[in-house]
Image (cartoon, rainbow, N blue to C red; front, side, top):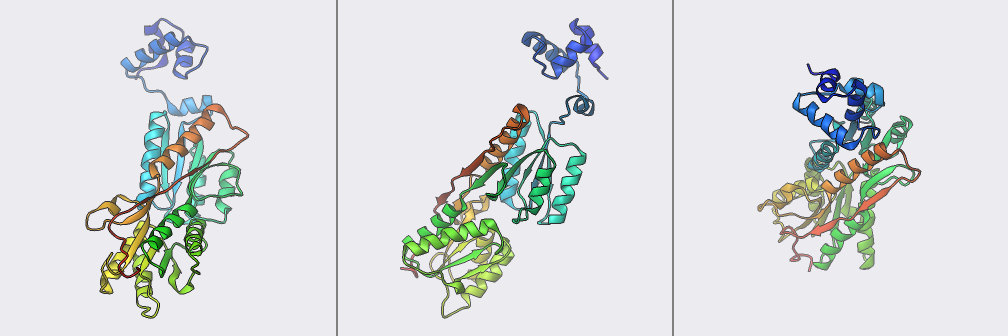
Length: 337
């Protein structure tokens, strides 16, 4: 096994100079540092990460905690964050908590024991209770996906109000007036923001929100199927269009429409939210609000690494990314017009 002493002997410098060079210390001249690093690579030297962390008090690791990695939305964010972190010399501990607050807190303890340098968190709890515990850890923290006005930490989110407005306005322009909202859980901030956009678009056209066209539940395709079927069976006030809380719910709504003997888009128009890869499949062709998922992952990882590199700044950044409407085949104006 190659050691620092071996590298020092070959480079003709002291052990201390090799150590400083490999740890990117500025006291070593740039050309000397690069020569030592080249020799280390040629000799197949791998630094002892544990020993380095004890010296620098940094592990070059970041904990990324998401509600459900099986959701393609979080999978794409995670992939982007991992790619950027690798480019910048950091490693990711990816933790999927399966929508469990208890598991989220458990991972906080596990990652602290592994001495991660910071956290990127998409919290499953919208009341901020678990976020407070992450902030108390004293480590760098970036919140993603959900905007929390009450916390002074880095945040990277989507303008969900505007996204909900885009989706609903598009359906209104097509002539629809009975537009269902099949959203996420009622106590979810993300759902509240998207519903606010839905409501704003309706009110601009002088249309009051019809409570019978609004329902809440998990953002999963099974739930989307069940809740849409319930809406469609209301023969007196069935919607001609539906704004789904995400693309998975929209897929469930498509299945429900087919079971109810309706055709999308001829009989029922659909708009989703996320723009997952499956939304562009020819047989699905779902109109949806596209979130810049990769950009969210990139911004989050750059924020946290910049803070770790430069030290904590007094001002925390809040980055709000803008969604866009992707129009495909699932919207029709036949019944709405």
